[in-house]
Length: 277
Figure 1: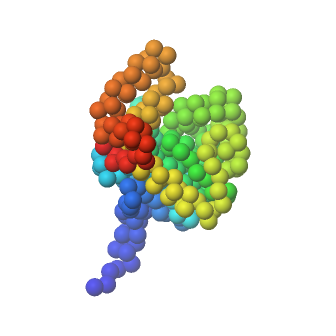
Figure 2 (figure 1 turned 180 degrees about the vertical axis):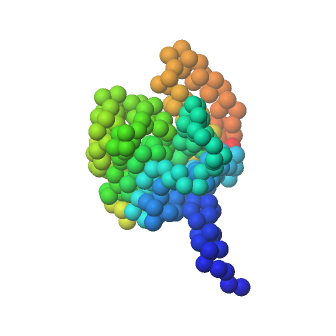
Figure 3 (figure 1 turned 90 degrees about the vertical axis):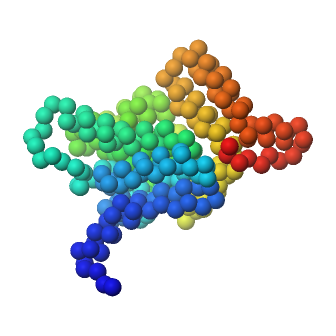
């Protein structure tokens, strides 16, 4: 059965095709797939990414996540075409509500995912695309990748938690430099500043991401999740609160099978086998 060009075009730009999803060896791969638009993220894509990250948290078989993209761009920012609209006149509060429901939910979904999330940045990451990458727990970048705080070029204030993420990663002075000028930051400079864990040749990006993700997938998943929570909260709390959270995390983790396996393997002088439970 053949389909019309209109039907084919609709399927090609559906959330399922514009955000590819595969799983294997305990890893959930989320791939932005609109290379012709430098993977500028649409409303539908954003909702699918958020849902896939929530699914990863709930699925015991998934023990790590990779977010990457096809083509020359990782994500060129937000593409607002296709966003729901009631057609009415904008009123006070609409913009703030849109940001809360949109860019902030996307970044929060990465930060709150209960599995470690790796960004494999294959090309330009601009605006919310940069913040999507920087919200990830580990960032790999191809040598050709660039990070751009593009908002100031458009006369806009950063969204998607940029003013929250960047100062925590590189300090307020560096963050202001990037946000005030909007200059493109090379992968090498991003690594030097601490925004990127490792820069690799483009042809090695997927291989390296796979190696890192599968290594994480063999680890003690609940311990990693609790560690992620502690680190993400550490810069927002005082020492007493952080110490209390650490003690609570230890209490919870010691009820897991993996913690018992880790201790037993140490006593028995063998390599542990973690099951993510």
